Structures are given as C-alpha cells and as structure tokens.
Image (cartoon, rainbow, N blue to C red):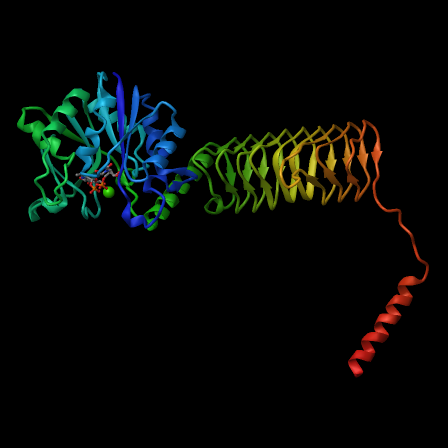
Length: 449
Ligand code: UD1
Ligand code: CA
C-alpha cells in the first residue's frame, strides 16, 4: 500500500529560547527534523509533506536537503495540530493510501513502530501511537474501551478521572488519506486552548461509526524535544544507542562513553576507537583501522589498516588509503593520502594529494591559501618531504623526489630530483662562547645596579 507522510514542524519551540527553529537543533550532527524523517523514509513513502511556519525558510531548506522531493507547505498561523495537517490537503491530492502524521521534534520513533501502525490499519480506520508514561504530565490521554480507542482528551480539557489515565498520546496518527482529511474538516476549536486539535479526529471517527485503536511503543521512542535540557538528554540517548550498535557490529571501544558519533558514522568490524574521539558527520572508517585518542574526524574516509592520531584532525575531503599513518597534531583537509604514506607529526596537508609510500616530515605545511584563493599541492609516490618544508601551492613534487629540511618549495620538483632552498650555514668559530660571556657580564651588572 502506498504511504504519505505529513511531518508537523511549524511550532515555535518557545522553550528552546533560540533564534533557530526548534526542529533544526541537532542530535548526532543532524537536525531533529532529519531524525524524524529518517525512520519514516524506510517505509518508502510515496510523498512526504513537511508543514512549516516559524522559521519556514530555514526549515524548508533543511527538509529539502534531506530529500529533494519533499513537498513543503506553510501554516501561516499556528492554530493547532489539525489545522497544521489541513495545510497538507493540496499536497495530498491524488494520494490513494494511508497518511502517517509525525512531529518534526520527535526524533526516535522507529520504523518497526510505524510498520506496526500500518499493520493495525488492516482492522481499524484510525490508528494512534500511544505509550504508557511513567509520568504522564501534560500529554493527551488515550481513553480506551478494550481494544478500541474511544477518544483522546488533551490534558487541559481532561477531568481528574481522565488525568489518572497513564496511556498517553505520542502524536503519531495513521489513517487513510481521504478519511483523515474528512475527519479534519469536522474538527472545531471549542476547547481550553481554542486550537484545532488533531486528536479530536478519534472521537469524531467513533461518532461516525468508524473504528480506532492504539498501538503502543516504548516511552523512549516518543520523547519530544521542548528545551535545551531535553535536547541534551536526547543527545545522550542517541549516543548511547549509536555506541551500542557499533560495538554490537564488531567495533572495539575502550571507553565508549567518551566517543561521540554522528547519525551517519560508519565504522567497520575490528576497527579500534580509542578514548575521546569525535566523529562529526560524514565519516567512514573501514575494518581494522585504528583511531587513536583525542582525534576529531569530519567528512573523512579512513581505509583498512590505517592509523589516525592520537590528537589528529581529519577535515572534510580527507581520503586515507590502506595502511596510511597519520600521527599527532596533524591536520588533513581535502587531500588524498595514498597507500602506505606517512604523515606522522605536526603537519598541515590541505588541498593536496600524496602518493603511495611517501613520507612527510615533521612540521611540513602545504601553503594552500594566498589570502584569496586555494591552490593544490601534488606530491608523487615514494617521495620524501624533509621536516619543516613549506610547499607553496600550486606546486608539484614528483615521484621518488626529495625536499631538504626547511626548504620553501616555490617551483615544481621533477621526478627523482632533490629540492633544497635555504640559506647556506656559516659556523663562526668561538662566537657562541664570546657571546655568552658578554651577556652574563651584562646580567651581573644589572643585578648589582
Ligand atoms: C500534542 C498532542 C498531545 C500529545 C503530545 C505529544 C494535540 C492537540 N495534542 O500536544 O495529545 O500528547 O503532542 O507530544 O495534537 N504544530 C504545528 N502547527 C500547529 C501546532 C503544532 O505544526 O499549529 C506542530 C509542532 O511544531 C510540534 C507538533 O505539531 O511539532 C506538536 O505540537 P505541540 O504544540 O507541541 O503539541 P502538544 O501540546 O505537545
Ligand atoms: Ca510538544
């Protein structure tokens, strides 16, 4: 059956106290909105509609960034969740099948849970996702009668008896598209908040002789983010799950609590991650690679058997081939390092390529930026770059070539050549001893006077 998603993301998120729309705050390096869209995308929806309002331009851009086929619609005034879904009416035109309504600020609903809701639709017209709350607080309450759901009552409108119910509304609802839009037409705003409540469709459906039921999931899935404290707690939940998933797939971590992952981090079996490593988005680490302590990786690919760190930084476009060694205080950006090459100490390699088995000496810098434009450095295979070489890009050093220590390379170095560009050394006999004596005498005189 074909599925459409409607994701509600028009709310302001007042309690975040932020200029950024709530759904764009991040967990695991990705906006809350992406997390909400991610598990639902596994259902291969026919279309996805995102309802925006506060910060609409930014939210729309983020939605399109996740999926270029998203249909963004605007809710000019936030008159309630039913009113928000109503904005998707035109975008849903012609869709025959079910609609699942999700919230953009609820990042952890799993694909399995959504599948269970779709399965429950076989026997019921409206399916609501509920959970048994440890502390039901101000959630809407699900009023049930055996297997069937009679209605949903919002906390503000509930009687004491209804407030005592612990089965709560997550907000996720599934119904046939035409049925859903029909029911929404009948929703009014005669309630404590004077809002058009999506939750009212359950009671209306029952009055019309349609059936409704609740599917339940773990409370941990239904967490919505309303404040920065909740955002941090959700981040912790995300990190804990991501670490466990990696360890269960064969990744070694000595101190998993100190390793921070992104939503898209990929790490192969038998890779070893030492303590205090941060994986920003876009990182792939292959099997058997080793990421040593206090390294920071972003947008980088580390191949089999390579070693990175301790204290290394891989920036976007760092492409390390098999058995490459990147050592301490080395930064690699937009550069490919070929098989077996070594960049072991205190070096910046940016906008460059380094050939197989080449060795880059300590303190080497690719001077890639002239203040206006970036330029490329090309280093061949089996080449030796002496310590403290400055490579003034654009420049090429050939295969089996060499640069002498402290050379400032401003011209291309041919294959097999050695570049040496530094002031010749001159040893002045006895000069150091004389100078020390003079300076010590001066200091002694100052101490007296
Ligand atoms: C809603 C449910 C409540 C449920 C709770 C779960 C209703 C009436 N109530 O309450 O039963 O227990 O979620 O968290 O649905 N939104 C819009 N436009 C609007 C209003 C809301 O897009 O006009 C979006 C918000 O951005 C948010 C979501 O809908 O993503 C939920 O809105 P919110 O105001 O947080 O609903 P709650 O009062 O928490
Ligand atoms: Ca809420």
